[in-house]
Image 1 (cartoon, one colour):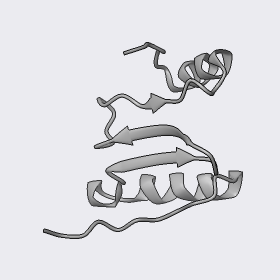
Image 2 (image 1 turned 30 degrees about the vertical axis):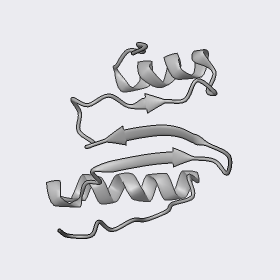
Image 3 (image 1 turned 60 degrees about the horizontal axis):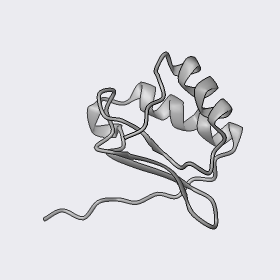
Image 4 (image 1 turned 135 degrees about the vertical axis):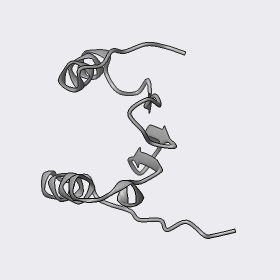
Length: 81
Protein backbone atom coordinates (compact mmCIF):
# COMPACT_ATOMS: atom_id res chain seq x y z
CA UNK A 1 0.00 0.00 0.00
CA UNK A 2 1.49 3.38 -0.97
CA UNK A 3 2.28 5.88 1.77
CA UNK A 4 0.61 9.26 1.34
CA UNK A 5 2.68 12.39 1.34
CA UNK A 6 1.82 14.85 4.10
CA UNK A 7 2.51 18.56 3.94
CA UNK A 8 1.90 21.20 6.58
CA UNK A 9 1.30 24.72 5.31
CA UNK A 10 0.89 27.88 7.36
CA UNK A 11 -2.31 29.54 6.10
CA UNK A 12 -0.84 32.92 5.19
CA UNK A 13 -2.22 34.94 2.28
CA UNK A 14 0.94 34.27 0.26
CA UNK A 15 0.94 30.51 0.93
CA UNK A 16 -2.75 30.13 0.10
CA UNK A 17 -2.30 32.03 -3.18
CA UNK A 18 0.66 29.81 -4.08
CA UNK A 19 -1.34 26.71 -3.10
CA UNK A 20 -4.20 27.82 -5.34
CA UNK A 21 -1.78 28.35 -8.24
CA UNK A 22 -0.30 24.86 -7.82
CA UNK A 23 -3.74 23.25 -7.78
CA UNK A 24 -4.93 25.31 -10.78
CA UNK A 25 -1.88 24.29 -12.81
CA UNK A 26 -2.04 20.58 -11.86
CA UNK A 27 -3.89 17.68 -13.36
CA UNK A 28 -6.05 15.67 -10.95
CA UNK A 29 -3.00 13.85 -9.56
CA UNK A 30 -1.72 17.13 -8.12
CA UNK A 31 -4.86 17.90 -6.15
CA UNK A 32 -4.84 16.92 -2.47
CA UNK A 33 -7.24 14.16 -1.50
CA UNK A 34 -7.52 15.12 2.14
CA UNK A 35 -7.25 18.59 3.62
CA UNK A 36 -7.21 19.56 7.28
CA UNK A 37 -6.96 23.11 8.56
CA UNK A 38 -6.11 23.45 12.21
CA UNK A 39 -4.76 25.80 14.78
CA UNK A 40 -2.55 24.67 17.61
CA UNK A 41 -5.57 23.52 19.62
CA UNK A 42 -8.04 21.84 17.28
CA UNK A 43 -9.12 20.95 13.76
CA UNK A 44 -11.08 23.78 12.15
CA UNK A 45 -11.86 22.27 8.74
CA UNK A 46 -11.70 18.81 7.17
CA UNK A 47 -12.26 17.79 3.58
CA UNK A 48 -12.05 14.05 3.00
CA UNK A 49 -11.50 12.74 -0.54
CA UNK A 50 -11.52 16.36 -1.67
CA UNK A 51 -13.71 17.05 -4.68
CA UNK A 52 -16.34 19.59 -5.60
CA UNK A 53 -19.08 17.11 -4.65
CA UNK A 54 -17.87 16.23 -1.15
CA UNK A 55 -18.75 18.42 1.85
CA UNK A 56 -16.29 20.45 3.88
CA UNK A 57 -16.62 19.76 7.59
CA UNK A 58 -16.11 22.97 9.54
CA UNK A 59 -15.74 23.38 13.29
CA UNK A 60 -18.52 25.04 15.25
CA UNK A 61 -15.77 27.15 16.83
CA UNK A 62 -15.91 29.36 13.72
CA UNK A 63 -18.57 32.06 13.84
CA UNK A 64 -21.66 31.32 11.75
CA UNK A 65 -21.67 34.75 10.08
CA UNK A 66 -18.13 34.07 8.81
CA UNK A 67 -19.16 30.64 7.55
CA UNK A 68 -22.14 32.08 5.71
CA UNK A 69 -19.91 34.67 4.01
CA UNK A 70 -17.41 31.91 3.13
CA UNK A 71 -20.24 29.89 1.55
CA UNK A 72 -21.51 32.93 -0.35
CA UNK A 73 -18.02 33.52 -1.77
CA UNK A 74 -17.89 29.87 -2.90
CA UNK A 75 -21.42 29.87 -4.29
CA UNK A 76 -22.36 27.19 -1.78
CA UNK A 77 -24.56 26.85 1.27
CA UNK A 78 -24.19 26.07 4.96
CA UNK A 79 -25.95 23.05 6.43
CA UNK A 80 -25.66 20.89 9.52
CA UNK A 81 -25.34 17.15 9.37
